[in-house]
Length: 186
Image (cartoon, rainbow, N blue to C red; front, top):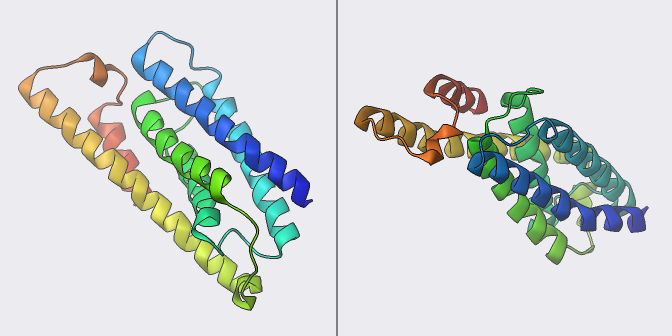
């Protein structure tokens, strides 16, 4: 099982990189196809969940013992929260998706490059501790998404007041979805 989790851990940065390139492509070229992004997000999330399960079973603890393990959990929770709050099949906002996938890609890349199995403290085997820390990481991921959507909202609001639109703002959602995204992320 440890070998399978190592293989998936090697694949995960590539999947997050594909998401980053896909969202950036949609952001830079508004007419490009969006149909494949939603399935790609789902495949990435499912494979990452399988990795977390395999790693937890083989190591005997959740991804909590080192900061590099925690980076992988943060990347997963960021994408989960983003998928819950914003992504719908056929409807993708590339501006926020590019930012979220960039942050998740960096976290997963650092985790995959630097993570290695280490001796564990007995507290990490306690299921209540794992539930507690995992739920806290989900809360921090939601806060991170709200932090991403806040500046995007302010930039778009100020641009609308000045009536100076650029190509960057074509793929950002309007103010109402950005406000909903920030509100739901909190």
